[in-house]
Length: 113
Image (cartoon, rainbow, N blue to C red; front, side, top):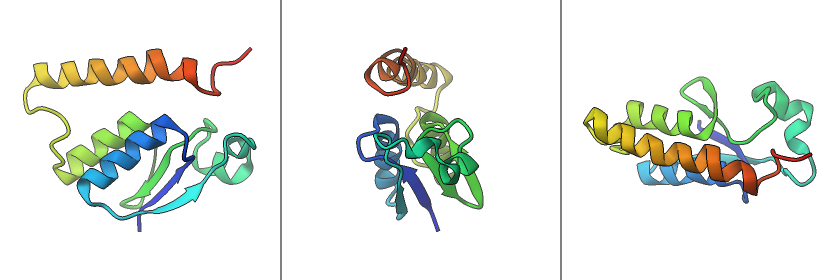
C-alpha cells in the first residue's frame, strides 16, 4: 500500500501527487494540516524528522523530499519523467531545483523570522 502524508496546499506534496497520478499509482492520503502545526507533532516527526510534507510510504520505504521521491518513482517505475541523456536530466533538475529551492521557500511556512 502506498501512503502519502501531505497537505492539500503544499506545492511540494502537489508535485508528488502529480507524479503518482502520471504513473497511475493508487495511494491513500494521510492529511497533515500545516496551518495547525501538525507537521511538528509526534506522528509526523516519527516519519519525517524534518517536520515537513510530503512523506511517501512506498515499497516498504519511507521517503521524504518531493524531488527525491519523484526521482525514485521515475527510476523504479520507468515513468519517463527525466530525459534519457545526462544534459537533458541536468536541465530538468536545474528547473526543478530553481522552483524547489528558490521560489518555494519564499511562498511557504518554512521561511519565517
